[in-house]
Length: 44
View 1 (cartoon, rainbow, N blue to C red):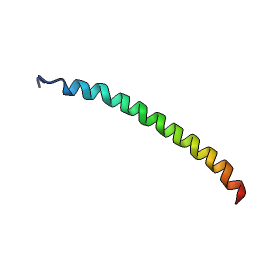
View 2: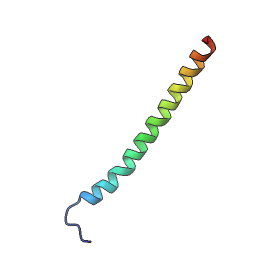
View 3: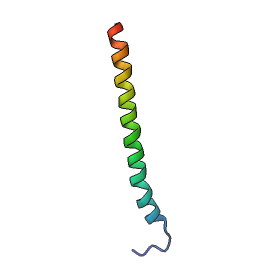
View 4: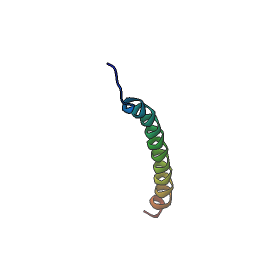
């Protein structure tokens, strides 16, 4: 399979970056949920 376009290479380069971005976002969301839960649940 010969690829003349650079699309496969760009996709390979972009996908790990997206994975890292989503990983960071998920960690931030988890931190936010933890802070939110610790502040909200004691009130109940």
